Length: 454
Image (cartoon, rainbow, N blue to C red; front, side, top):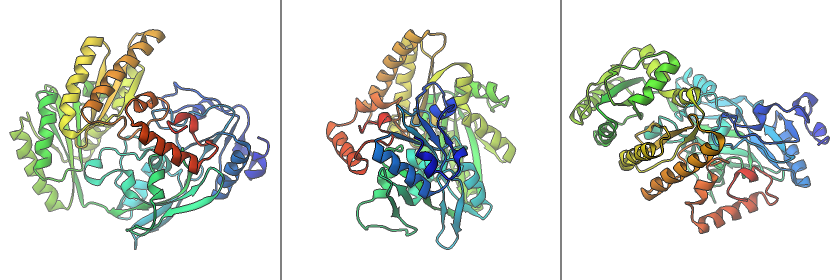
């Protein structure tokens, strides 16, 4: 590993001992790996040099950004190299003529969104963790609350500069809107969790910033009525930006965690909707939304005209995983089912919860069927927790699959969800993916241990 000092120009950016635990895990900190080196490159050339060295010597490499993932994708293995890209954090260009930006992978989502909005532009992908990096968002194809209208990260990636496993540097995609020129290598990388290449530059699509954004809290007597109303809201053609759901018991955890309060505490569940666009469009759609919600059984329709009130509501919604974590260790799940099956899935979750005695906190993106589920440990000892968790996870995943659902909507597979993914994917599909992995990473050094591609 001493060779790394010849590749990285500043020796303070190479750590061969005393690697902090945070670099050996993910944001939950429960899975801990091992590594022989931690490096902080600041250029494509340095990344290329590190990868060339690793490839020549068969050394495993684990790329990482802010480490905010929830499935162990940044947990290293063996005597490998942690490639931390957090210092590659510069916005290189904002091109208002092509509505694109060129940035490095370590730029924080929240900083990038703030910067482009100051220029009257908009980067819509909106995962819950705003202190994540854009490179990490691309590596997991992060979605978030605005996916129902604007789509996910994949829809805003025009091109990427990549360092391959052997150190070669290539560019895939471009600033162009259309591209039917060969295989879409760019789309292979998006969502690949660092298993195929290292992202060193990102070309991102921007759009004009909406003139107005308006949120509304819609309380319902119970979750089934609320989820059923979502289809009515979508059919009302109000073009919602976000449609979130949460039961009252879940919101109470968020209230306790933040000290903030939700309106209509007698409700059994809430749907939170955001509209954006031109002023006249938002006002008209808000009235249509109100009519659809009331007709579908809403107890009230509360518009959040005050920006501070709206921010507080979204703060409670955004902290729910952390609110659960503050009470007990939990295992986060982000499976996805067809939107018309969401209520069926939540109903089964409650049945499993009652049968097993394990608390299961469910909330999520009602507009796209992405259910966030926290399996709560409670006072179980290690052996009981491991047994009950595996049994209950298997049951809810299998039911989701029976509805036509998938293992992950936005967190990825990583280490934690690998067995559940492998139980559902076709062997033929796996064979194709593994062939692609071997073609791009012949020595299987890039995040191989966390993947299903080894």
